[in-house]
Structure formats: structure tokens, C-alpha cells
Image (cartoon, rainbow, N blue to C red; front, side, top):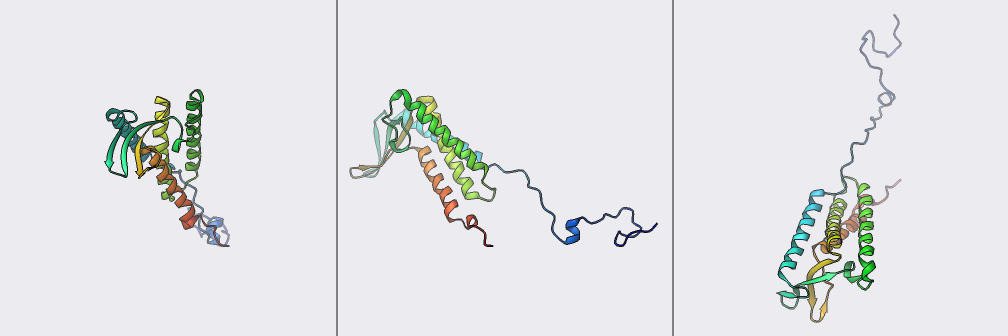
Amino acid sequence: MHQPDGAGGGDLGAVVPSDEQATGAAPVALPGPRRPGVHWWLVLALIVVDQASKLGVIGTIPVFGSVQVIPGFLDLVHVHNPGVAFGFLNNLGAAYQKIVTTLLALGALVGIAYYARHVRADEWLARLGLSIILGGALGNLIDRLRLGYVTDFVDVYWGTWHFWAFNVADASITIGAMLVFADLLLVSRHAPDSV
């Protein structure tokens, strides 16, 4: 029986090379399963720390009370924030406040989830930032759904100037956002490839 040239002689088990092997091109790897966009252990840890710190304040400091930590700079307080970050929407009517702030929080969570689905596994800074944001957002959402407001307790001030009171969840959201922006703005892989 005549074998065509290059078919491998009389070896019946020989495999004819594919087009990729014949041309010397490397085979294309199929994408593997996507890793989750966030670190769920970190999200859960931040929720626990946030809720525990709020319960500690609620149990030890009366509403509108204050405990001095660093004179002239830092106090622990107990205030209720029915609005969103930095007192925004605090003057919205009580009938609508819980609905509007909860819808805003849920909208933010949908945005975080959408963005997290598009973060690659090697984008560790963005994944870390999103995890921290998500933990903070869920911590405050638990307060809104359970109480109708968020408990704030960190009061940073200088002389007569006071920053808005905040909590662990607020700090997490701020730090996480800074990490995500740092990833977007500073990490070189986001720059377009040269042609």
C-alpha cells in the first residue's frame, strides 16, 4: 500500500500534524474558569469588624455621647446617620429616606458586582479594593435594613473643625476606592499596547 510523502511510514498509530503544528504556531489555550472578582473572606471579615464595632459603641456610649481618645484630635461618639456618606441626604423626608438610601446602596452593590466580573485574576490591587468596598457597603446596608440609619462613631477634629463622623464601613469604602483608582491610574498594564 502506498503512503503519501510525510505520512509517517508504516506506523498505523502515527498522527498527522494539525495546521498549527505544521506551521509552527503554538496551540491556542482555551480560557479556564474565571476566578471570583473579590476576596469573599475579606468581605466577611470587614462586615464582622464593622458590625462588632457598631454594637460596641451602641452598648457603651449613649446617643450623642462622646468619649475622648486623643485630646484635640479624636473622639468616639454615637450618632445616627439616616442619609448617606458625609451627611448627604440627611434632610430628606423620613418617609422616603430609608427607601432612597437603600436603593442607592443596592445600586452601588450592583455596580460593584458588575465591575468585579470584569477584573482579571492578575489585577490584585483592583480585586483587593473591590473586596474592601463591598465589605463596607454591605456593613452599612445591614444597618439601613435593620435600623433605618447607620451608626457612626469616629469623630476626627482639629480645634473647632470636625470631619463628618464615620465608621469602619465608611473607612473601608474610602480605602477600597483609593485602591481601585490606584489600579486604574497607576498600574502600567492598563495603558494601551503599542502597535
